Image 1 (cartoon, rainbow, N blue to C red):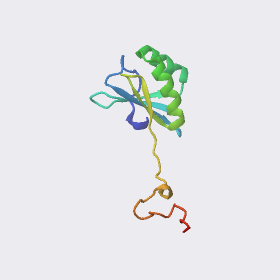
Image 2 (image 1 turned 180 degrees about the horizontal axis):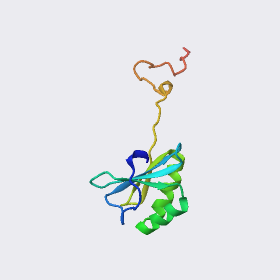
Image 3 (image 1 turned 60 degrees about the vertical axis):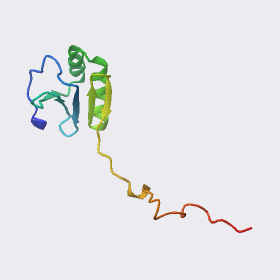
Image 4 (image 1 turned 90 degrees about the vertical axis):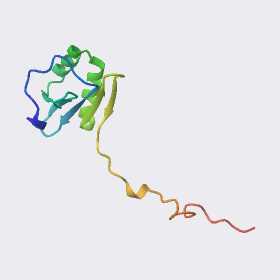
Length: 116
């Protein structure tokens, strides 16, 4: 099982302040990482309807639906219970060409002034 995920049964409720839902593209499965003292993770499988039902059972239907969609798109997403927020988690590569060094490039981007 990916990420050391535990097999079913799933917890009765989701503890903590947040959870992370990861979509493993190679295995085509979802893994739920929860905010408990053990840092537990659960393999939710690939049945989206079953996952939607489970999030309804936990009392977070809208949060669960949006997290399932975002996890599939970005690979992983954090769901925050307090305000129902979803935060896509993905690695961004820095584009070194877009970095502008103010002191080093001072005046280069401005057109030369003509004397009148």
